[in-house]
Image (cartoon, rainbow over all chains, first blue to last red; front, side):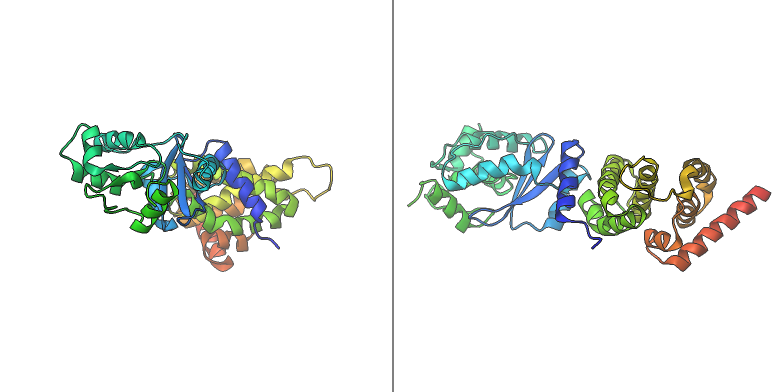
Length: 187
Length: 150
C-alpha cells in the first residue's frame, strides 16, 4: 500500500538524469549474448559488461566516475537502440559518444585503431599492434582487448590470432563466435 | 565509512522514506515530496564527507520537504495545519546549539524539536527505536541545558 510504485521509481530515476545530477547512469540491455550492463557518464557510454555483478559494478563506477551512480533507463536508451539494431543486423557502425578518458594513452590509441576495423572483417593482434605504431606489441594489444571497457561497440571480437584461431575473449569464446557469425565474418 | 554509490543509498532508504512521507502528507502529495527528497539528496550527495548517519540525513531532508509541502496552499483538500509551521527558525537555532552533541543526540534533538517528528520516526531515522530516540533526545537536551548554565 505504501510502497514506492514502479512508476514513481522510474520518474525519480529519469528526473535525476534529466537534471544532469548523475556521474554515471546504468541499465541492463537484453541481447543474444546475454544481458549487458551498459553505463554512461556525462561524456558518453563508459562501460559494457557481460555477466555483471551489479554490486561490484556499482563500486567500480563510483570509484571511476563519482558517487552519484544510479540505475536509470533514459540515458542508456540511445545505446540500447543501437545495440538492438546491431543485433537485428540492421546496424553496422555505432554512432554514440564514448567516454574513454580514464584509459591510458596506449590503450586509447589501440582502441581508436580497433574502432576502424570494419564490420564483418577481422584483424590479427599483430596487425592491430602495427596499426597502433607498436608492431611488436601484439601481447600488449591482447591485454588492451582483454580490458576493453566497451566490448561490442569497440569491436575487440574482430581481433584474432595470427593462426586464424579466435584465441580469446573476455566475455568467453562462445560470445566472440556469436558476434563474428552475426557479422558474417565466420560461417 | 565511505560514501556508498547513490544507488545503494536510494535502494536502502526509499521505502521507509516514502512510508514516512505518506504518513505525513497522504499518498498523493507524498509522491512529489518523495521525488524532491531524493533529488535534493542527490544534489548534496557529493558534498557529504562520509557515509555515516545517512538514514537520519535522509529523514532530515524528507522532514524539511514535508514541512514545505504543508505550507503550500492546496485547493483540493483542507488538511489541518501543522503546529510546526515556524519550525525552521527553531531548527536553525537548534542546529547551532546542537553542534557539540554526539551525532545521535544531535539528530534526535534536531528531528524532535526542529522538525517535530514523533519518536517512532526518529527511532527509524536513527536505526533504533522510539525508546532509544527518546533517550537520545532527552540526553541531548540535558547536555544543552548544562552548557547554558555554565
